[in-house]
Amino acid sequence: MKEFKAESKRLMELMINSIYTNKEIFLREIISNASDAIDKLHYKSLTDKKIKIKKSDFAIIIKADKDARTLTISDNGIGMTKDELETNLGTIAKSGSFDFKEQNKKKENIDIIGQFGVGFYSAFMVSDKVEVISKAFGSDDAYSWVSLGIEGYNIKKSNKKNYGTDIILTIKDDEEYNRYLEVDEIKSLVKKYSDYITYPIKIEVENNNKTELEIINSLVPLWKRNKNDISEEEYNTFYSDKFFDYEKPLSHIHTKAEGVLEYNSLIYIPSHASYDYYSKEYEKGLQLYSNGVLIMEKCSDLIPDYFSFVKGVVDSSDLSLNISREMLQQNRVLKTISNNIEKHIKNELISMQSERREDYLKFWDAFGLQIKAGIYNSFGMDKEKLQDLLMFYSSKEDKLVTLKEYFENNKEEKDMYYACGSSIDQIKSLPQVETMIEKDKDVLLCSNYLDEFVFKVIAKYEDKDFKNVCSDNIDLDTEEEKEELNTLNEESKDLLTIMKDELDVQEVKFTSRLKNHPVCLSTVGEISVEMEKTINAMPTDESINAQKVLEINSHHPIVKKLQDLYKNDKEELKKYSKVLYAQARLIEGLPIDNPTEITNLICDMLVK
Image (tube, rainbow, N blue to C red; front, side, top):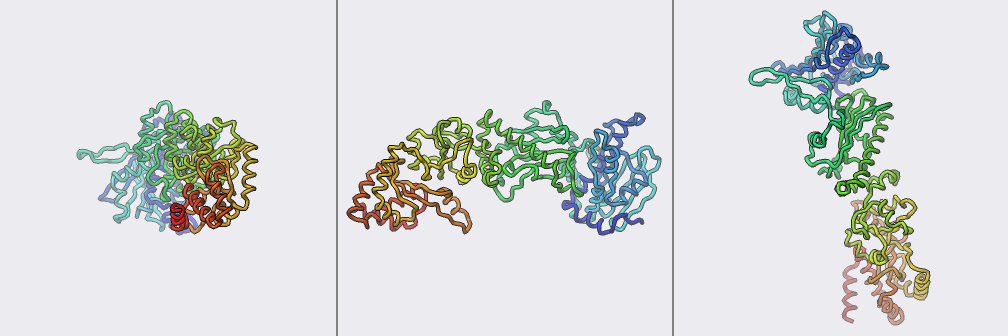
């Protein structure tokens, strides 16, 4: 018995037990090696006119024998000589495929999957014994390579009529490994990992007491076909079968990139969120293939978090894979593909927004929150990419509009106005919003908890600032109205100070921006009432308070009552202040800290 020509037996042990975390990929690795062997002979047939082999002659054949506990994978590829068996299988991490690719790297049409020479050894994860019988194309002799694992291997002459390679795995005698001898399980693994190998993969099956060969792979993936030859029904069927979603997607993006970087991609925008989409369990990512071989089920690096709802596949031979193929090295190629996909997704959404608004509204209903989170979570770094995808409810249009549409419809305005609350109806009833609508101002009505944070991050659109109509910096008064209001506030300075000292507010003042309501709350600073409610509702110990301003309608009869109380009964004025402040808090949807006291005060006022 010969020992492996690796640094140590420990290296073999690591390859079998540590490099691959998923035992079932052994079949993917062996099939990929078989495909490489066929590729080499096919390439040889293209360059040597003496070799009369057609591509349709090639195949990979799988046979399971439960009684003998063997799984055989055969190919009619280029095969190996005795020296090649010694070199390629006797030395761990020695790759014949890699050498072949290096020798012919200046020539076109060479897509060799195997590069690192360790995939073959994954067979020992499920096998007690591995036998390789190979006959090189053009040779008269066949040889057998046999190994029981880390102890070493034997090579001897063997009988094999045809060129190619048979790999015979003696599956471990344990219930855990029985599934690798089941035809249905083998079919499932081939469909999962090797469905798009470009040569037929056939399996021996029993049919009416006869042994037949059944092709179990699709050969040519949909994403490698010409998009002009694919019907909408085929796209939708592929989506349904691949991603187990029986509702039609809203859109698909089929891309074939050629040139310096080559890849194929087929991306789908679903019509609804999956049941776990907004949960911690959800995993984003696209399926990643290399020459039709599944490398990663969910490659998260291919899409940004804010587009995590998309589903699809990417297939490229330009990606640099690490030793196990289960993880991708962070490299320029992957980043370039990711950036391209991101642009395609955004462009498709913008197109849907302008040309198929009903579909876009479905998308927005399902995934609008994710777009908003993308702006907020990046602290505005991605706002330029995402802000044109946003939609908010317009008080004037009475429907959802984009920021661009709002901007175009309100070019004469100095600022862009918005208001936040728990629902559209509740926001419309806010005193400040009622006044804005009365003055024919368009207000974006925002009922999602993230909306205000998004506006704070974006800050402005084109040349217009975003202004919360519930803040104290809204200035719509004429100079005459301002002067009149300033006079009233100055004359009532002592009255307003008494009220302020009685309340937990930053300021109390008269305002002219209310229509029918006696009072409202506004805020100063960066924290609004809605932000206070949102942050304080989170399951954390964090608590904040907005700097509130109690504004009193200068045209409301309550002003006369307050002035009379200031002159005649300052203690009663304090009670009225508490009631008015409680009323303003209720309008804003804020809790009242002392409801019993307030109700008693109201009852006292009613009986007087």
